[in-house]
Length: 176
Length: 349
Image (tube, rainbow over all chains, first blue to last red; front, side, top):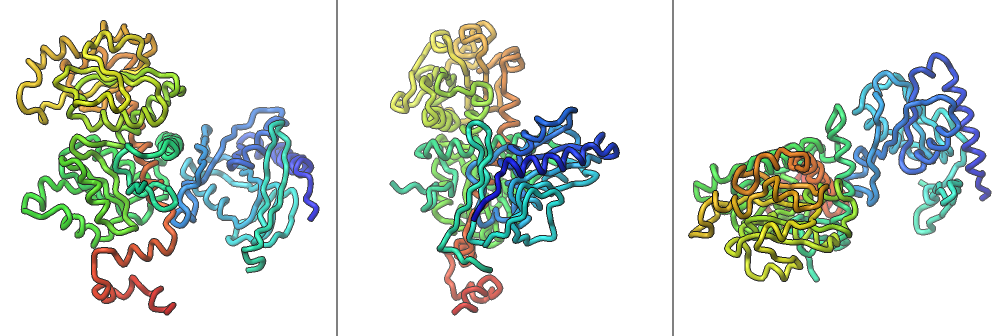
């Protein structure tokens, strides 16, 4: 399968986020939040293109995941850092790959423990299909339908360039 | 080698002592604790990890600070907490430790935090409980107090991040101190190159140097150029016989004063596990001074205990959880009466 160039997708969603921030009604009271790790890389690149300062933060959401009872804590957690006041902010939540919607659910629950945002918009590089919850991204770089036994990963090299890789696990069922 | 603290995959199962725990596990606990420091600084200081779980603080020996911080830690993880001061309840009526524990298991407790005056009590309970229950040692006799050792190294790491380039001194009643033993194991496992113990001969266990520490009997010589000073409480209640001439005499020779603190590095930090005996092991001006990190130790203690509970409380496969319901100590024919707890077995057969 030919994977899209993540750098192109990033410019695409950056443009959409910048357009949303240009809306004078929202601009004053907006904030960006990246979900570790891919969402934080994307957010940092988007922040570097902004002309004015926008409050931003990072979330791990590991403490809010619904698979903790089965899988425990993941090995490498990053502390969440939301230094701005979430109350009444229009938050653009940024993640790399949208799949089941469970990470987004966990991230939203964590955000609400910091305050009551005015709105949350979800921006992702890729929607790979397979949502299990009534949650969908509003800003999407590309939609690529993948099977459950496929795993799409975003990585960042030492120069900060983004890469996508697709792996298929032949031992897992390819359909639900 | 079999380690009762680790499961078959090498993950933490119980926390009984720092001795024998791999560096990987210590770092995992400390790194996880960093996340929980942030949780405590939010308006809503609670995360849902242990929702629906019950943590039992079983204290066979009195404690205020340790029990309170364990209770706050469990509550901030959304667990339900039951505090048992066994010293004042059933044990005084003659109940054995295992009967007390069995009763709590029958109430579907998920985690035990145990303090006992006898060394090995937590280990004894950990061997007895079914698979789905974790035990945390909150101090057993003179043996170990692992979460205190962990919160102390966490505090050191926050102020002095380069652990491989530190000189640390433990001062005072090492003989009676489970805290000192846990601190020494934690420091040496994490690669601190120089750990000193400073105490009169009567307050040092024989063979302490085999733990990889340098022994000093003179406070001034021992404090020279250290980065971290960890004071220990003089445990009068555990002393029998004449170990010291008097508390005043002890303060004169081993009490930490501003003058003696000057012998350490200028940016040295001063720690104390509490409760402090002001004017016995530490002068008030040092305890309340700018180099003291005694209160941050308490704050970090909550984050470290949250990390330990979060690592112990999750990640049970469905099979292990179902096995736990059946219990290891009760005949299965009696369990069948409960019915509701074992539908999976019945339906799949």
